[in-house]
Image (cartoon, rainbow over the protein chains, first blue to last red):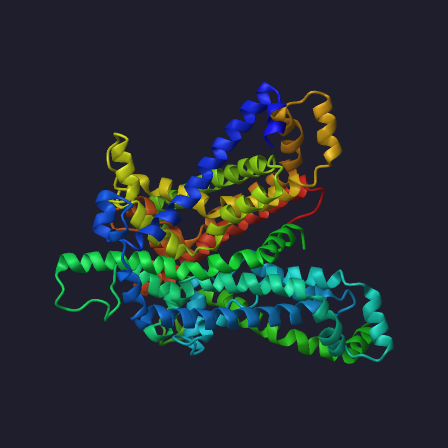
Length: 297
Length: 301
């Protein structure tokens, strides 16, 4: 690398040095908050704020983590989020594939009408209040269904799946038909197994989207037992609530503030670790999602 | 002809059964709420239902348009979107151009892994980190003081709201948005670059005469699409970042709608506000689609 660099012209050397500096600054910008919060989660917040990150081992402690893990709200939030995200991903994939297959058939009678119905929803919708009232009138308020069903149909997902199915060779279906396979058999035995890549992309995006969102849960859920992780975190991080049981009533105000601060740091770390650790393994699917999303359906 | 259609439907009834669950969900959750928009023109009472409530015509629209804070709300929404759009557009392009110069595959992969990661951190966590890092006693302020600057009330002073929103937005998405540009750049044939080198073009000249022209069509479409989304700026982050003191800048249409609608229960009025927003959105999207069609030889979104 160095040898190649030396052979460059002066102008190019200068350009590369500037690029390296810019990229280095950007990496610091990305990594600094993460590193600070991670290291800070093991420190006394008062000390962290006054003296900064300490180099002395004696200043490190696990209090925040101990309190979080001995309290049920974050752990329960994890469980609920896992349930919502998995269920939402499954429903999304099933609905998208079953709707996309008929629409992918050029000879399907009614294709234009259904496609138009879908397309309209990409431009216009009923909006927050009418949707909220509907969910309430259907008796889904404060139930898990409110997070899973209303957003299961997405025109965008169906268009992606339809484009994928349309690109499967026509000969496959023709020979399946000759062998006497019904539409359903062709779909289940041939089309779906070949559609694993697109199904992985749809499922991962649905999973992460549901995992990271809080809005629907905030407006539709009332009982704390149903709260997904993001709502529990919102209470701790934004609304400065301390989950019951994490602090005893006798503790002084200053101590209370300190503990609340510690819990913030450690709950950020605990709740973002799983996705950050898992995402590199699925990176290629996420990138694929960006690429097919950008090609016109 | 009609006979043929019937025959297709009879022979392929399974296709219709497959379509049914999705179609039902579509009609119930997307089209019934569209019908519910009627309450924007009625004095909706939950007891009397949508049909039983009295018509009030455009009363709620009049109320909204003559609201003393209307200009502020509208301006906040458009400006926040606009700044986010402009800076959020430039950063990933610059990042992609620089990353594209890295020859060492392993190094490039690792950097990509790092810059994409914030995309997977939830909005709640990002805003939670903002409150910690930008607090009056937090590390950013400590650093600023050490460099001889004054401490800033980032989260409570309205003047900083847009900057914090936009900069943290770049932190979240710049890496991820660069994927599409990097992929486009990787499509440039090596012979083109070699030919330019032989002709004595330096790095900057190659960027300006090869890379940027390659990125132009993609970036034009991405930019235009983001113009179409200017009124649909997300509720989630702005709402979390709100403190009572930064409201003069942080109250946008989406957060206002949520407050009057769901917190105060003024259903009809907030539906009218939502409809107003949605109509502007459709007009923007349709005009954007028209422009894309022009640029893209007849192909719309």
